[in-house]
View (cartoon, rainbow, N blue to C red):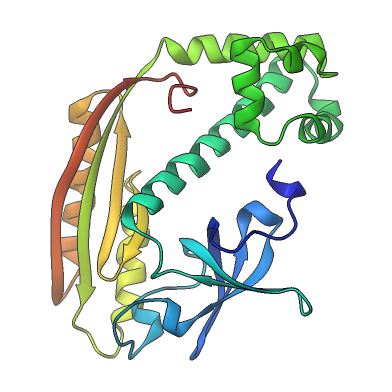
Length: 265
């Protein structure tokens, strides 16, 4: 699965988490490549002129990037933020979040099957048999020959199928917005924005950086009103904390769908 990968290919879309910011760029870790260290040059952060890199990214932030360079001799990788399109960002976020959900589902299946003491060995086994948890769950739902031949315990397989079936019976409502946010505070603007973004996440709203000053916001609820109320709370947080700056928010779309976590495959 993801942890087995070593080096990404040039042009591949990846999830990078900022670990250290320097005047000339940022060091990041690729979450899907066992926290592989990569570098994001400042010229690859934005297509515009950057006076202060902290106004665009901050430590701990997860970014959707594109692998732009690989030095085979030095085993170093560079990534680009500005070369990723909004559509690529959205697709990658969906894939990444789906994989996380299916990873969690697999662990819940082990717990329900009373196999938690064997968790590490069974996770390792799953990784040798399937490239991703997404592939594992797809094989389970389709009852493929690969799934039938899997050495995973029958109890674990049965629990996976039960959880997948349960997920199909649930519904979720997701609202998505595009937010434009920037601070006119020349001294502490970056810190102000970090605080605002953290406060938004506390309202159970997912935040993903697109490109300055745009962010993608999404909220999930038991119904439309519930999802919208989370976005409203997040907006109120911004207006209360942003002393002086730009704040605009526009709805992207509403999705009402069954909570069939395999439906996006």
